[in-house]
Length: 557
Image (spheres, rainbow, N blue to C red):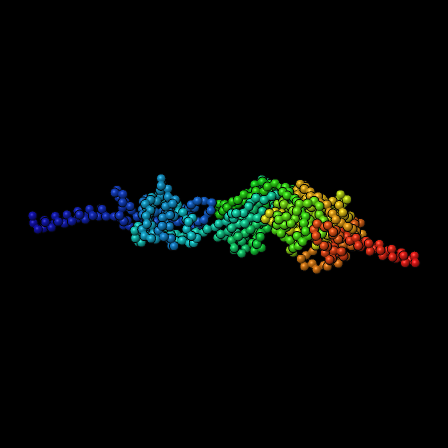
C-alpha cells in the first residue's frame, strides 16, 4: 500500500470515531443522566412558589400546619438543593420531611448537604410539596431552590412571610355562671390586636369585634347574662340596647368596635340557662383560633342568713371582715337582737350580681354598688335595670318598714360585696335604723327580712328587744339623696332633714339606753341621745312630764 493510500485509510478511521463521539455527547444544557441507566437529569427551566405569600405558622387547632410549595420543571426527575435565610439544615429537613407522603412521594432522598442546605430528589414535572412551617419562628424567609449541584443551573427564589396569629381563652378561669350573673372572659392575643368573639346557643347568635388598645396582649370581657338578649319591660328599649349594655371591657384602653346581633331570645327574661359556645376568629383567617364553652346554670338563692353581734363589728367592715366574724363566732345565728348591736344579713346568690353591676354603671363614687342595690332591691328602678329580679325588704305586720337608703345615710347600714364568693353583706346598727309607717323596733317588735330573686323568696325573722322608749316624729322625711364618700352632712343636719313633713306616713327614729343586763356590754354613742335614730330615752319623757307639772303648780299658785 502506498503512502497516499495509508493516509486515506487513517482519515476514514478518524471520521468514523468522530461521528461516534458526536452521537453519544449530551445535549446542550444537560448534565449527566436522562439515559436508560437511571441517571438523573437536571432541568433547564425551574420554577418554585408558595401557595400563600403570608403563612400562618401557628394555627393552634391544626397539628402540623402545612403550606404547599409548587415546583415546576421541564424534567420528570431531578435533584434540587434548598436553603433559606436563618434556617439550618436540620430545620429544613423537618419542614420538608415531616409531611412527606411515603406511599406516593413528590420528593425522595432528602439529605443534608452541609449545615445550611439540603438536597432532595423531585419526582414529576409539576408537583406540590407540603412544607410544615408551624415550628419555625415568626419572620420573613427567602427560600432558594437550585437544580443541579452548582450555582450555574437554573434556580428560583421565593419568599414566605411566616406569622403567628394566636387568640385563645385563658385557662384556670371558670366559664360557668348562674343565671343573671356576670361572666368574666379573659382573652389572650398574639401577633394581632383584633379578634372576633362569637357567642352561639339556643336562640342566640351574636358576635363582638374586640380591639386590644394598649398592646398588652390581654382583653378581658364582662358579659352580663342578665342583660344579654332581652327586652326591658315597657321601658322603650329594645333587646339590642340591653344586649350592648351587657357587654363591657375591664381595661378602658381596650374597645368593642362592633356588636353584631343575628338572633337572641328577647322577652322580659335574662339569657336562659344552658350551654353557649364561645369562638374566636379573625378577619382573613378561615379557621377558628380558639373555642370555649360558657355554661349558665339555673337561678336560686343559694343561702340567706342573719347574724347578730357587737356593733363595732361593722366599723369600716369589709366583706372579708364580716365573713371572718361569722367564721370565728363574733357574729352568731340568733333571731333576737338588742339595742346597739349589729344585725348582718348574708346573701349568697350569683343572680344578684348581674343586675347590681348594671345599676352600678349609673353611679359614681366608692359607694356606687350600695346605691345600685338600693335602686334595684328597694326602690325598684326599672329604668336602671330591666326585670326587677331582686327585691329586699325588712317589714313588720303593722306595715312598718326599715328604709334602707335613709338608714345608710344615717350611718346605720354597711354594704359590702364579696365578688369571688358571689356574696353580699348588709350590716345594720340597730340604734340607727330609720323606719317608715310606725314604731320600728319597739320592745318585742318582730320584723321579717324577705329576699326575692326571680320569684324565689327566702325570709329571715328578727325580734328587737330591750327597748325603753320610742320617739315618733310627726311625718315622713323627704327621700334622702344618696350620700357620697365626701359627704360632710352633720348629725344635726340629718336629724333636721328627717323631720321635714312631706306625706302622711309617720317615721320612727329610736334612741335607747341599754339596760343593766345588756348582753352586748356596750354604751350608746354620745350623739345617740340627741339625733341618732334608735330606741329613745326614758329620761326625755320624764323631763317633759316634770316640767309640765311644775308649770301647772305655778298657775295654781
